[in-house]
Length: 531
Ligand code: CAO
Image: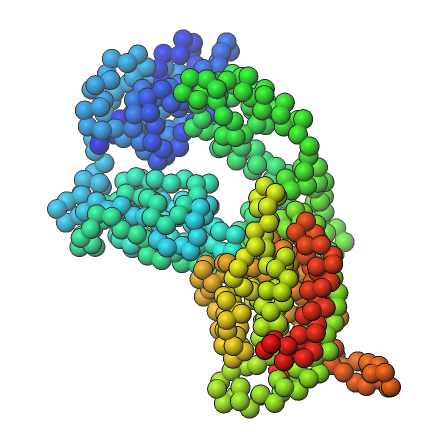
């Protein structure tokens, strides 16, 4: 590889303004791919790449005035490639010497390494940050990329010291185990093999958000425009098409081009806009939902602003997504757990002897597992197209755990196959891991149903938000002694409030009521669970 400065070719007029930069450092580009778009007094023109290569550095930015011969970008090209295309009209060939750092590191004591995605517990996880670029010298354990799944944020660290030569991913890509992240020249004797996975992704402690993430609405609007422009980069479309897309705020990456080599034509943008305008608006897209106004609370007194943790921000997004997409109904019920409580207390010494903590929660888990088998509509998910219901033949139940950084939902697998002691120990272990930020992605996945217990805190009932794509969640409030009529007299009984929120598209009211009433029976006489 050698580095070459690509220059602005003859643009037929004195100077022109850069209105768009279509590539970024690290991009692999091909001949004829758009590099920048210029606008002069008379015309808008796209400057194509004169050859294949990898962009090392872009040497100008939107708003710059340029003329023929100005440096445009540094391109890393295969040895010999520059000569082979020397006659191209827009080509400029000053070839820079190979980067000295690379040369120094790539000695006999170095080895080329491919670094791939380790086991991250799920597939197609979006990249939210790329922390390295070609030319960076990094140390082992430095973060290469950050991934964000529905439930957690993970840093993928470098397994080696060395020099990054190519970055194969970009923000917004979705990655699975073994996908290639970077190619680097690693300082030997790191490893013998030429391909390796990064060490396990480290789940990121919910780091405080930077002040930028809680910026006011106008700032957000500006950011989204910038994001839009970023998204429109590296797309095969001419300047006039890009201009229309900018005017209409269209994300070109969403359009399938019908021109040669899938080039997006003006007609494609027009059709896309027409289709969008005629489509019914949906709450799930957030369209039509009025924004909350930005209010200056300091006008009325002292205030203190604190950043939300990443975890709270992620949880917040998940709550809102579920709240907007899922038609929620909450069914309230109660259960007489007087006998259950007597039994539980009778087991306290046994629990202490075996180092366990037997709260009402393991009983709830066991009873829910039993009820989910009996009423499988609540152990299901809707297909993304909303035309099928997917019944799960396994019973994995999530438990909402309140942590200082926000809510986490570890999942207890195969609850129906586990005994009360095992469930009690697993609850304590998973809640402990959640609070110490040690949960692995796999321990938060695969749930069919969730229990959110506020029993130790208080309250008489609440309306939990369904942990979509699950279709139901059971809220448990504090059990209280209440007078109950036994046919002859009132007697004091321990009554546990149950609040079942469900997705009304998948579960109907009768099924939900049957579920809570069945659960209530099971809990009032836990011998039923043994039947
Ligand atoms: N009624 C009365 N007492 C209850 C109860 C109930 N429904 N549930 C628990 N308790 C008692 C327990 O028995 C225990 O008392 P003893 O030590 O005397 O037995 C005490 O409350 C503390 O229990 P715990 O909280 O340590 O354990 P747990 O198994 O009940 O709950 C966990 C574990 C992880 C679910 C809980 O700690 C937690 O984080 N709850 C919050 C979940 C939450 O925030 N949900 C809201 C989600 S929506 O924002």
